[in-house]
Image 1: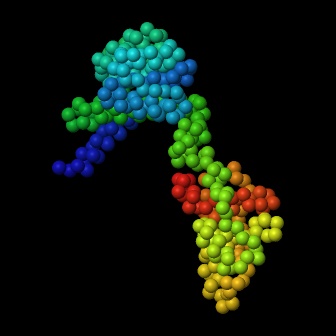
Image 2: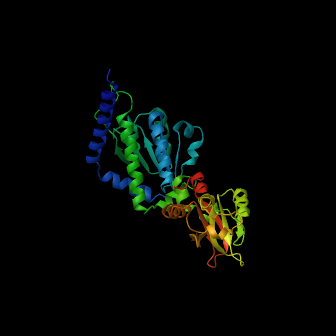
Image 3: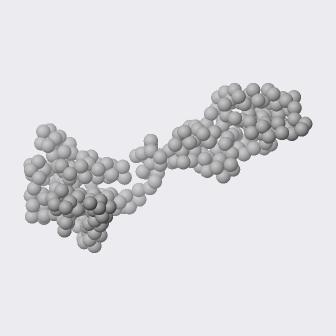
Length: 320
């Protein structure tokens, strides 16, 4: 049995379903978007079985892209949770056949509330279709299932149409990356848009030495600081240089090297610094990578040291 061919056939069937659906989108879609945009409450998504699983995913997508939404299981609705729906809400009910018993049972109650109902079904004349103010057609010519029974193409189409609704709503609301990050503060995008240098920089127990410090003492400070670098300051405690363990190793190769030398002899004078601790950490990472450095010193405009940011810290915190 050639499983590769079976997989390709499945994908082709579902791809053709989506392609055909894209050609059949009608003004009903515009009306659905307008109804949801006018909603003063929440978008409630409901469905049973596979349709319910698709509905739960869509509710999560709507909620994270600027449309307050939640999923309500019809069975739970029949046992008290129907009170979660109000006349200010909009309901999207999903049932391919339009005759799911549990879903059909709550439809009259939804209509009694005067709540706008958008049905996603293959049959406008079904129970769901007749109760709906608007029907989004999810009919498919063929399920990808070889028995043409298991919901495959139909669930893929329903999911894609729901995603299309969400994208339309995002466009209508001018939903931006910063808005998305607000709903995902712990995600990668949230870290890129919200985590600042001040949130990650080390400001205490910094390895700082005076410019007249001997190399042997600077080496001890490097070991204590665990940053692989010491910050060198002048008599006014202002930053003048950096010395890394790499600088020391290279200095060892010099014929006239001495542990009694002043550390400033082997330092990087006037190193790269950042005066904006409110800079995004992701932008700081770009700066560090462009300058091919490992440690970025945060100072004020007068070169007073406020903290340091190590590339390892950025990586560990998932900044990219």
